[in-house]
Length: 307
Image: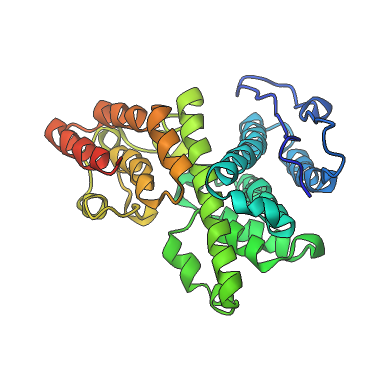
């Protein structure tokens, strides 16, 4: 089984850096468990290396790839913490535990090919428009690989970034036995929570939202416009905001705040508050949304969900 103590660490490069990551220094391993499945790391690394080769000297794309590689490692770490805190019974189910760890590690494997395809089509300006669905791409990669073609893993990767309703409506989920449905739902929720926690971490350390292509493609008016009515309706209904409704930068920020309505595990909820991620997003919204009375109402509604 995959050893929780053997984790990858990627030395993040800034966008200005021209050097490629030295993959020999990308990982560290502990020797406490010789059962660590090194093949999973090799598989992820092969996809990463192929994408790096394809984008060549385009440092913008190469930086995206390096960051997503590091993100994969941190999401695995987050997932292991959630498992230890909220799903300890998984330790007695080694096969399911390994499947969960693979879903965590591979959740963004489609990002590598997404970046290459976007680069080749010269459509980086459309990045924020979800031209390619990296979850679907990743699921297709795993489904074509015998070692990883488990429907629970495939479903978790396919739907980790979708509204949860899409997961429950997937015909492949509906065809599962009742026991496998329970395992599949647990797995996709684990990946979704672990992913969100790292996206908050990235915002805290790298100001990812303001550095996003979506932000730089907006007009000045859109950056400082108030919130859209559809987005507000969803938020005050305690629903995660549908990406299709996002029109302004304040919409984008509120979308990140609304992820709290999709938290599935106690560890996620606690860390979101304790680490200051919620306050960080409130501050960012206040910076861009001109309606201060509305931002105060949003804060009040969101914090009422903290208990």
